[in-house]
Structure formats: C-alpha cells, structure tokens
Image (cartoon, rainbow, N blue to C red; front, side, top):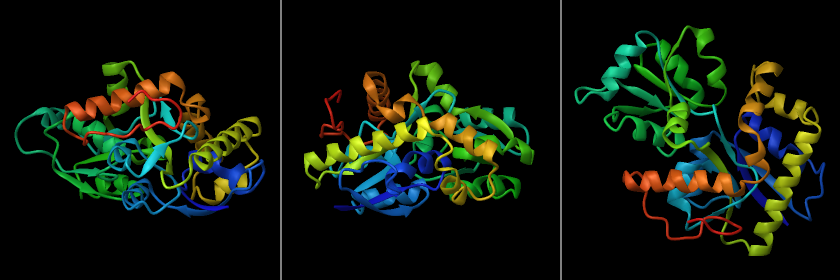
Length: 286
C-alpha cells in the first residue's frame, strides 16, 4: 500500500523518517511517496486534506481535526525548544513596544498557522503587525530592516547570534513558566479517510523508525545531510537532540496533557475553533 507522506527537510524530521522511507525497518507492507516542504506549506496542504500522512504545526491541527487524527509517534514536544523573537538592536525597547497599546513593530513570522505564531499571540496579544515569510528567510529580513522583529524556529535558534542578532524573548521558555508543560510544536497526523487498522499500522511504523534512529543515530547521516543545506554535522545533531525525544517515540499521558493544555488555552483566547473530534488515535483527553 503506497501512502503520501509530507514532512520538512529539517534534521529532526529526516532523522525520524529515514528508516521507514528507506525500508531499514519492517513497514508492514506500507510504502511512501514523500513530499518535502516547509512547515507552513505542510499546514496548508493539511487544510486541503491533500496527504495521507503529514507533519504539521499543532496550531494548524486545530483547524483540520475533522480531516486528520493525531498519531502517538513522531511528535516534536519539549522543553527549551520553543520559538524565539529576535531583533537587530535594542531588544528591551522592542519588548516594551510589544506590550504597549500603541503602534506595533513589524514582525516576520514563519506562517499564520504555526505554533510559533500561536505562542506569539498568547504572549503578546497586541502584536498584530505581522508579515508571513519562509522560516529560513526571517533572519535576513531582520538584518535588512524589512521587519523589526523575527519570529524564528528550527535551526535558526543556533544561528541568529552568529549573525549579530539579539534575543527579545524565548517564547518556549515563556510557555514553560506559564504552564510547567513541554511546548507542543509539531505532530504527525493520518488522514481519517484511512481505515483504523491502517492508521495504527502507520503509528507502529513511525515509532519503529524513531526507535531505529535512536539505536543507530548515524544510520541516516547522509540522508539528513542531503536536506540540511550548509548545516554542520554538529548543528544537525544539536537540532535533532532538541526536537526528537521521548515524546517522539510516544506522546504518553504527559505529552497528551501538554497538547490538551495548548488547545484549551488557544480556545479560551479565541485563537482556534472548537474541536469536536477525538483528536488522539489511542484514548482521548479531549
């Protein structure tokens, strides 16, 4: 059975999916046609229900829960992994402006439906002067003065200081202090049009792929490197260590609690619509 699968070319995703798409593990008869896209493109594809399996932002998932069910395996949740607001100069002044009622600085964001943008709205409700950019272009947009502030995700956490940029706030740290929970960034979902048996099979295969990667971290090195642009091996594996962890093997009760809290918070702030479906593949906390 061939299924369409979408994930980002970032090291955490290529690390997770390498073993299954290259049949280094038992895929239980499943084969995959892979689409590599940035997270907001994947979010938009999910809105259209285009793929059988896809990575997407947890924020976006709230809008497509009628089309997709969340798998236990493959998610990116964690502590110290959240998005950050950065600038070229005077972070204290810009932080004060974000909290004020007056004219707001222009912020480059990696997509309307990213979890990063959800966190920005939670921390700074007045910050509505936003422009959507591909996540990898945000640092340059700040450096060139096209935006006052950048909302960065992924490996840009490791590169912004090298470019002389400064941190205004770590929104992941903000979330952790507010909630005591890991921040749910991205999840893996399966199309509800697939049978329950196939959904569970996909979940098992992804878990097996993550476990294989943990057991032999360098197995997918060439594949990971081929999609990591000019990233050094050290930065690649820093990125993986940050985003791939126990929640990527299985969400567990702790991971599901964090996701429920994220959605409850977003609902209270009218950031997402009401979710009527049972979002989890196994069991229900919502």
